Length: 128
View 1: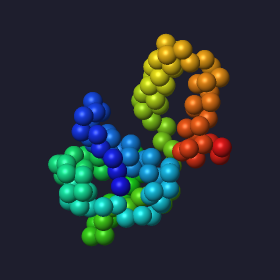
View 2: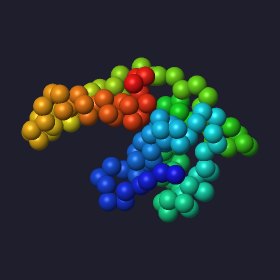
View 3: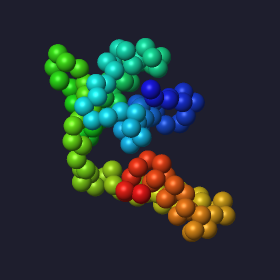
View 4: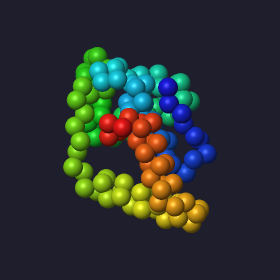
């Protein structure tokens, strides 16, 4: 269900968070779907259950999933955008760094915009 790169410098719990969000955008997960249990997912991915729990806690804090006592963990029916200014600043900085790197790779504004549009379309963001 999710791909984890053990060699990545990105912590595993953050990779899992990103994987859940991407699966939602791509339709691999839908609103109301039951998430695998912590133990089940830890077994599938061969990673520590505490890592899964940490990712689930952050996803719940962000309003992406919800735990229902005795029933399991589910994708929230209505995910509302949060005005998390700190996370918005992180996204802005990551985008800035990517644009600087793209410039030094010789990509022009049109190529960069084409890449952005391709990702927006691929992830079904923005009604493209």
